[in-house]
Length: 557
Image (cartoon, rainbow, N blue to C red; front, side):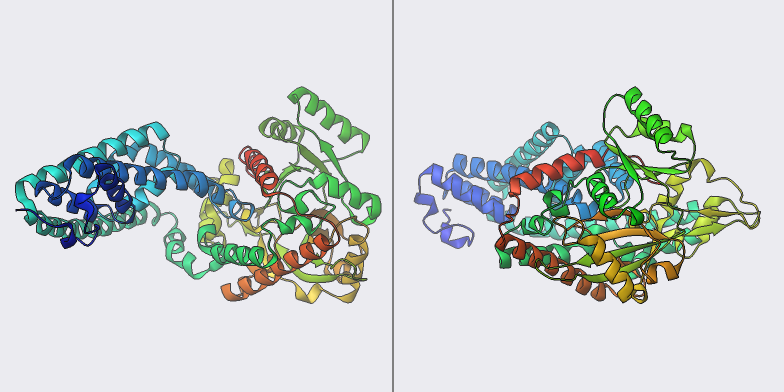
């Protein structure tokens, strides 16, 4: 029996009369849309003599394989850069990502083979292989062999069953989908059971965080929270006809503060213009460990910097690598663990800290305080019975960031705290490191706004960003006096009051959308005055260089 290609909606009616090379090309492109139906169709038509067998086979095989490789390449080339974006890295659990990579490395071969056999699993599996950096060579080999066997099987079965193969394929697809659903359900049930058995006796609070996390957006993973913000950025880029326009928002800061800006550069300028409001800081450039140790000792002696003091990366984000140094041994360990350029900064006890987001349009006489964030450093108090780990898991909020806290206190997690003994869980005033943020609008007085504006106008080329400051008491900040600037962040800084647990996610988006609108508008105003934004290529290179440094930073205090 001879079949016409017009009976198969996936193929042009005249395909059977086309040259074999065009037949193969058409089939290969069709597999990009849906793999199984074009392959099944080509196999049945080839068996019936309505299509060139060689063209059908090679077109389907190469189309399937190239499509697999394309998905892998997209995830590897674009997925990882998205995970490394400045606003994503701080919220992403890098330890869990490394664990997923190790897990896929052990099981990748069988996952790829089984994905070829089970419809509906291929897209996520191939994307995961790229995202988790499964090696290119094995991926090409496994997917190529699987696609070859898969295509041969279709064409062989078509010779035996003819048009009946379509009914068999439909039945197999339904069975495979049901089997996959049952397998996923069984796996989820088993994991939940294992987790309950493992954690419930010691840490009852641990079992509740899984589902509760989804009702507290401040703990959402970056991939869930940031897509609307990315969409807003793209929308603003199209409106202003520049993807890198925010780099012109602060002409006096490298890349406007989007990425790769030097903290010591802004701190040095701040100290020159407003020394009474700036925490002293000095640079420790990269170099041989012995030279860095000598330079650290020289700075400590020359400027009489006692313990504790701060060592932190010159290029940083979200508190990464910030260490509170209390002994010489801790300083030597930090210098050894982090070869990147560092800042030695005099410790400001506070004990209070805030983030102040400021902006001023070019030409404006006075700037504005956009948002103020109060930072609360969480603590746990001992009872003489429970270990530090048990106290963290039993705390209503700390349990949501228990993995990060416990990684910071690995050597103390089994320690039983004495009654009344207090342990501060984080030193860096950053939400990603476990600090608690509250909206501090009540602190945004005219006196504070005037003082922040005066400081800001003393910094050349600065128009928008966030100050992180410490102060001894609330009245000091309200009156615009007696506070110390720890650092100044540029265009990529967030108005961190959004992380107030009392805010809904929609309120947070509204604030972030307005903030990015200001960044683009100020960038456009500066562009009109001759400050051109950087080239996308230069921004990408700066981001890659910064990302390479971030991966080397030790866990923050």
